[in-house]
Image (cartoon, rainbow, N blue to C red; front, side):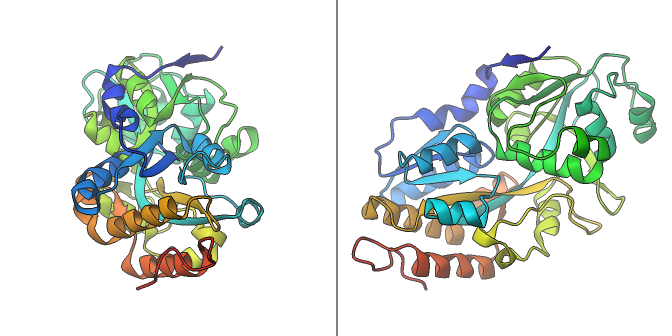
Length: 348
């Protein structure tokens, strides 16, 4: 039987900014993965740029629906759209920022970084094959951790989620049973567990249930002081989630190799790479309905790329490399045009 929970007060404190009464200068919706950094950027940008951001943290699936319905100026998704989908929808896609997805747990006596998991074991937990915290597979990975005989309470996303897309992509890459039985999608048929809406809801669900495990963007784990778990990566190394580990996973990414820069960063090679690294992508129209709003949106993202390093580092996100930013802004200049057929952004 599957259950669904709503975000608790602890998670609502994170998403409150999504519902604040901003002037509708720049409107966006989607990724909860990116909400913490978008909120920080908006706060820093307002006194400088003069424009406010009204962003709805509703999940990647919701963001894609809203941009396709033309109810917002930009959508944000952690699951990139395909080249065919972008072309058919008339959308331009580009990465905003990178970060890491981390397992979080609620186990008495276990602190952040005490435990380690590998991909096959994490997949078996979410498949319902491992149901106790003192299962031999977990004990083998954690010989020095006192693990209880408690049941594992699995918490997962109930909404269409780019975080789920990247999480399920990673599990499919490392666990054959997961690949054959569940697969990769923004919304999967979970074998077991309690569903929660958004990274906020998953964080709240784990915080409120002893023996729980979930997966969230690392900023949510930090902001809520959650007990995150280290991971064994593709190279067989035990890795702590840090901005440096996320950067290592992205270091060899060839962003121009995929339409709309749609590179997946999960399970990358390298001794220092965090295995569940992901990027958030923005979606805007190549021929927008509102030239002024889209121009303001590109100006905001231009500021964030060049001036948002401090805010990103504070939340353990990884900014896009300067060379990639130059490519993205050249794409804006060539592909996003106003009603007068002139670019809405002048490439530097």
